[in-house]
Length: 342
Image (cartoon, rainbow, N blue to C red; front, top):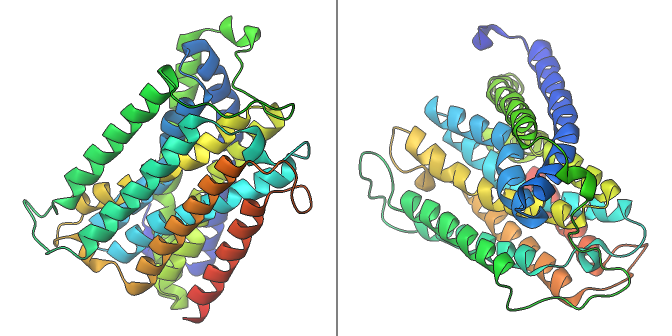
């Protein structure tokens, strides 16, 4: 493979092929994750937020790290930050697929709300790092270990919240709690983990190849890496979240669907930590352009609106979806319009 020699048409073809591979792998991944949640006893929220969130984000994390390592920090940052907003919008799409009630009403859980607050904390750490002095130790900014520790501590809180809940949403006839299915308990745990790992490897490979195609497309078309990252690679590497969310909703695993998006976004914030280590020219936080700072604000706003939806729990909204889904769609489309015309 010599990516530098790829033509524009070949780069686009490879880009599309990797997108298809990501979609197919993501569909299978949902079924495995749902069974693992029951068979391992971990639960849908944590499997969705931690395991599935990390694995479905593998293509994106590999892309960001590779881009940072090869001296393309704006692509690395834009892919990480733009992917969060896209994935939150995917929840609105999943809500459209669940016709019985508002998805956030049916899937409300303390674990998912805790993960949402962790995500806002992580985005805040990124913003603080951007406006802090550009100090580095071995070319790594202090914000990087803080970001990793904040994520680990936040996930420990989520796990404790599941084991010893101090708050529970009111059960209604439309609530779909995380219930263990007996058939899943009879499956081989080793085989499930093996399939899960195989699909994770496929997603990682797709992300690695996508990075080369994205850089070539940006160079050949003259479109900035920030736009390519935020709109093209971010959406493409986020396709597993869209596929897994819709598949989870159709399987009735609603907590898994919501937890996978929120937890996946929390993990996506670590893209910047990994990319900062890979970027050998200094702090990657201080390469973030103003357009990406705008997207960080958009992510905070969209996450806060999602948390409002999980707390308010509107049963039926406009066209079968809640107010939060409508707002997520409007905000994302508006942000994309501003990014293109900015």
